[in-house]
Length: 452
Ligand code: ADP
Picture 1 (cartoon, rainbow, N blue to C red):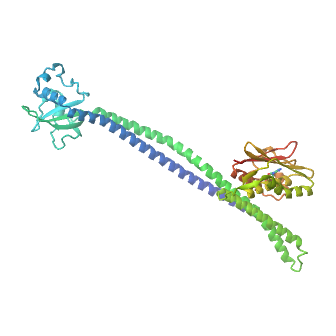
Picture 2 (cartoon, rainbow, N blue to C red):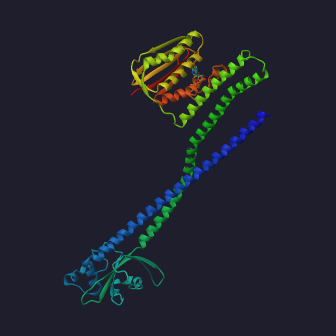
Picture 3 (cartoon, rainbow, N blue to C red):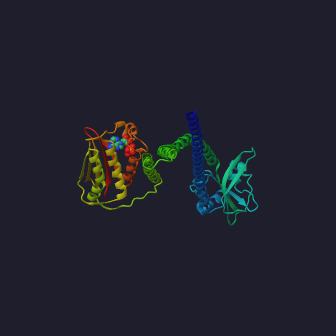
């Protein structure tokens, strides 16, 4: 009954988590999509602005240049009204409108205005006069380039960029010259470009839906992974904490059932409860350390260590323990220099490896620790001839709470937190740790820490 309820709880929890994850993923998706839309819109507007301004810029440049080109203006007046210098008049071959070499654009028209707003060069404008006759002279913005739309008798609209300049020509009615450039073609091109741009933007935005979805999944992957890892960690930790707590509780309750018993009579229960509290202390210390490593709170306190002396000190109790357990223990250290390390952490690291070597070996097995300098690294190997580790489990033994089945069954007292801590210590020193098989049997744990 109880297990059914807990199973249901677990399923509910998973469903709730999946929902939260989906919500988060959807949120990521919409943020990505919105970002893409904003980026495309900004790019589109910028490209469009650059294109239109550069297109009109060249027209405006032409208009300004022509409006200040006296030779050109004189020629226009002379062609339009018959007035002009003799040298100018003699240039017969250029008398037709549009043949003037100064005009680099055949779209350019010039209207000669009298003071009262009459077009003086109507003859010369020819058929174009029909289009242009509806223009009214406006002297408000002399010298400024403006947009102008002219509607002919059939209702067709023609667009121009135009500039009006004031001239004073003796013996001539011409008071203003209006230069016009037809922009219909350009407007059409710009309009087409706008359509293409919008279609392209929409197309890329549609593609960005797929990309956003993919990115949302990509963003969620590490979150889900670390969330799962954290949940697993908390579940494992509480499970491991519960066992010693239950033992302590039952031992203490047991004491109350025999209030007349002396301490000596209950010494077994008390000793067991005490041993469990010790285990609890070490477990909470390990958990605390791992939690701190996760939040990058733990910093190293490096100092110069005399490796030879340091190693002898660390291995001494293990050598004695090995002796009592009838196991051979040797230390081979070639390093006679001082190295800068966090002595407390390195001590902890060696204790973990040596403790495991003792835990996972039997009587008559051998344990050897070697220390040497290799390629600017301090290399240490803890070699044993014990049980060995199955090939398929090698990648997992550095995971938190991982214990091989064999180790789980035997009461070796570990929680599977030793090697993850060992790995963190080596990594925090900038080194690497690996495990390999010892021949013919057993395990070699090897770590390398750079000393420069
Ligand atoms: P534990 O507290 O269980 O020893 P560790 O993290 O130190 O936790 O080790 C994880 C697992 O790796 C152990 O449970 C054991 O299965 C395996 N292991 C570690 N060291 C050795 C070794 N020297 N020989 C065989 N197996 C080992």
